[in-house]
Image (tube, rainbow, N blue to C red; front, side, top):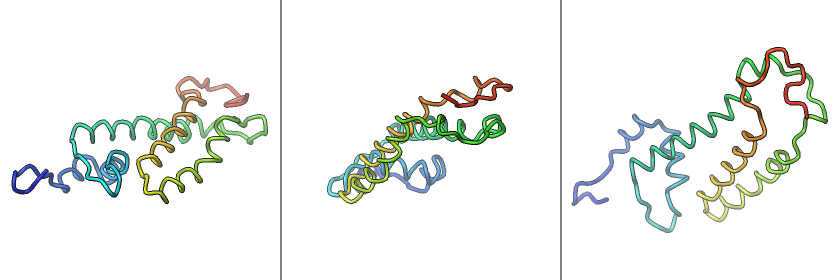
Length: 138
């Protein structure tokens, strides 16, 4: 990208199209390191945006849908998922370590790994029977 070649990107247009969070996620996830230049690609931004919407959006819909929230009862010890809990317990330290080393992309990868683990451990809200009293019980 260069001003002299006339192939620059208008950041305001990207923000209008993808939103602040979409552009921010793309820059963190695909932006390279602070020491290196990074490539910008509208196509890659679209892919990055879909990953954010699909994975994180999927998780949010699974844990915040009225169907699921309406069925939530008291959390019992047997409801714990050791794989999810293990990943969540180490996430903060992994992300902080990556951020302290300026490895923002790796921090994002760590977050997506945990999101994928959590999503795989939960049934889709549409598959939860309305009269199932044992919602996520194991």
